[in-house]
Length: 83
Ligand SMILES: [Zn+2]
Image (cartoon, rainbow, N blue to C red; front, side, top):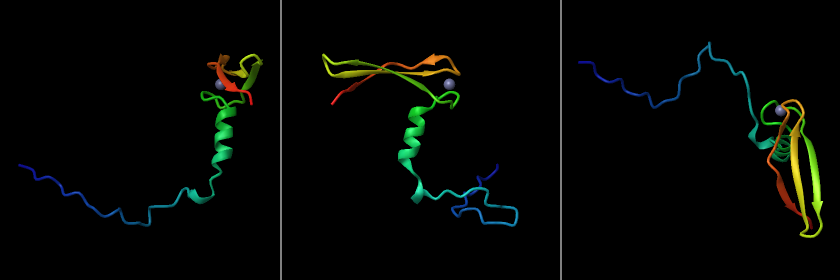
């Protein structure tokens, strides 16, 4: 009967074969820039989106629809309050 291997609680030691391939400085990430990029670009292809707006000044809302010309896909419509 085989005995179970004990899990090593220590992280793997750095060896000559391990190399740093990327470093991320979490203190200097511009989250606003990331959010704006995600809002303005297609989730599928990453291409720039086109926006269409229709204002309704009776109930002070703005209807917004996004369109990706590359994927030929329209997003769901969203409504924003006009202030
Ligand atoms: Zn697209």
